[in-house]
Amino acid sequence: MYGIGAMDKKGKRQSILFLVNPKSGVSSKRRVPQMVEQYLDRNRYDVTVCYTRYVGHAYELAKDAVARGVDVVVAVGGDGTVNEVGRALVHTGTAMGVVPCGSGNGFARHLGIPIGVKRAIEFINAAEPVDIDYGKINGHPFFCSCGMGFDAVVSNDFAKGKNRGMLNYIRHSLLDWVRYKPETYVVETRELKESFEAFVIACGNASQYGNNAYITPFASMRDGLITASILSPFNAFEMPMMATHLFTHTFDESTHVTTLAAPWIRIKREKAGPVHFDGEPCEMEQELLIEMVAGGVKVLAAPGWDGTCAPVPLYRQMYELFAGSLPDIADFEIKRK
Image: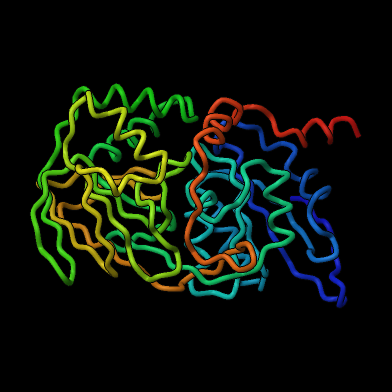
C-alpha cells in the first residue's frame, strides 16, 4: 500500500483510494503507484494506492473505504473490477473513478475516460462526481451491461482461457459461432409481452460491451431505463454487415435487431443457463428480471456529461485494436527519471 499526501486550494484534502487489479487486461500494473504520484493533482487529493490479491478483494477494500469516509475509490482494471468496486459504493456518498486497464473497458469508454493510465489519471483531475443508474439481473448489480445467448457462451469460454485481449475474444467468437443454436425467449415489459427467436439479447446501462462494440448504441446512464437489443438469427454472409453496424454505432438500424427501453424487463428462456454481467459469466435461472436503479451510484465524469456516449470513429478503433497492447508512453517517461 502506498500513501501520497495532497492539499487543495482551500486547505481541505479529498481522500482517494486507487484499487489496482494486477490480473485485469494484458498490461502490467507495476508502475501505477509511480504514475499516480506523477500525474494526479496533488493540490486536490490525499492518495492511497492498493493492489487487490483475490476475487472479491476490491469489493472488501471499497466497502472498508466507505466506512472510513473516503471520498473517491478508483477501480484500476476492467469492467469486472468496476463491478466489484461499484457494488460497494451504491447508495453511498463515495464516488467511483475508473482507470481502464481491462480487456474491453465498456463502462469507462461510455463515460469517455481515455484508455491509458496517464490520460485516465489526468481525466480524474478535471472530473466531477455525478449520479448514474445501475442495473440488476436477478438481484445481481451491474454497471455496464448484461446479456444472454451467444455472447454469454463466448464470455464463458473467454473467461476460461488463459489469454486476454480483443483478438483472443474474436477467436473464441468464431469458434463458438459454429456450434451455437439460437433460443426462444419470452420478453415482457410494461408495454409488451412477446416471443422472440434470438441469437443474443443484450441489456445495457452503457452503450457498449467494450472495445467500442456498440451493442445498445443509444443507452444512457442517466435516464433510469434499460436499453435492450434483441438480435435475431442471421447467416454467415451477413456477418460483415452486422459487425459494421456494431462498430459504427448503427446496430439498431439492422433489420435483425429489435430495440426496447424500459425500467425493467422480464425474460423467460427455454432453460437455465449462462448469462454475463459486466463481462463476467455465470449460470442463472430460466426466468430473469432485469431492472434499473436510477441515480444509485456516484461516478467521476467530465463536467457537463449528459449520460450518453459519443461514438469513436473507425480509424481510431483500428489504432486502438493494434496499438492497445503497447505500453503506455508514460511508462517510458517514468523509467527515464
